[in-house]
Length: 452
Image (cartoon, rainbow, N blue to C red; front, top):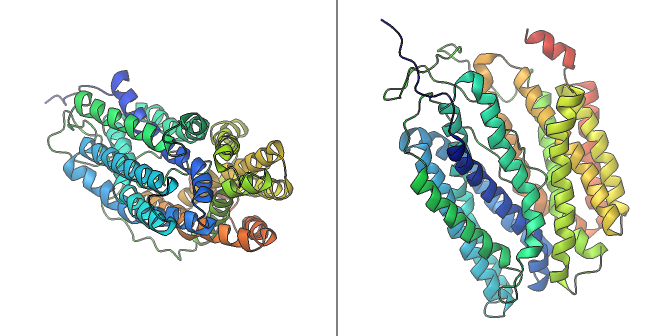
């Protein structure tokens, strides 16, 4: 009996544009918010540490709930999870904007404003994490293996592009009435429009090639890994439009442990480097306000902060989409050169006192972390066999998420206690990864040999 052919192996361009938009809106909205929050905190006379702590709470909830929504997308459908993510984003953004506006006009006290903001932000951490893995799984399940790499790169580019667009748009969205909360209003409206378009024009789930979406890190400016990996194709999928491709993985998969000697040093490097990157990003906006003497006029600080964050995001994309493929850097080389750049950028950034030098230092450090993160991810993946790829991807995602739970707030606290301590902590963590990578990480040649 002839095997039935799948009806389609590619997603129509209009449908891909919708999926692209879902990822773009959430990434751009969050990074736009990050570029105005230091100025809002200053206007409210709230200590920098507590502003960073609100983001840490959201990151923790993202890390805890993202795996739940990734699994549930197979049960409730990917479109439903995308809609849930957009609804969570819209509700959270609108509430955050309204609460901050009431605080800025004096209708709420600073403490009440911050507590209500953190509670509203928690809505996004809990429900917004449903969208990225659902988009990823939707694309993977509707494209054949030979078309999937190109389709997934389009999805990845939307996430990365959003980290550049958000800080660039934020200063332009500060309107006379809403003031610093303008980006919240604008991106809430955009997200609602995207939700309506999703409901109207994206067909309900009936995948041709089933796949499960993996956990995607929260979209942090200049730091979120914009690459999205290829997903596992399951052996059977009742009700699909066509025959699914069969998995090459064995049915029995060994349990992968955190202390596995193949992974141990890659995971340690990822945790140390991730904390250095998160601390750098946490400090960035407050450093711009301090070095450019804009604490007395926080609204004027949104433009310079946006420029610095956009420079960092652009450098990260340059590393991931340009340098690594062009230079054909292996995992260990990416980690080592990334830490060299991160150390140089942090050193320049720590002594910079004008916008150009601050942006240059932050971009150089971000370039380094942009090299480091894919190197760490690829190294951990290549260290294990095919049957263990799903487990190691979960470990990598957990390490990436854990880095943003406490490090931004701790970095800001150290920076405010004594700037030299904050910069020294970032440099020390980067140097530790460099030494660890030089002495303990498997060489690129050994990784290639092991995977032949």
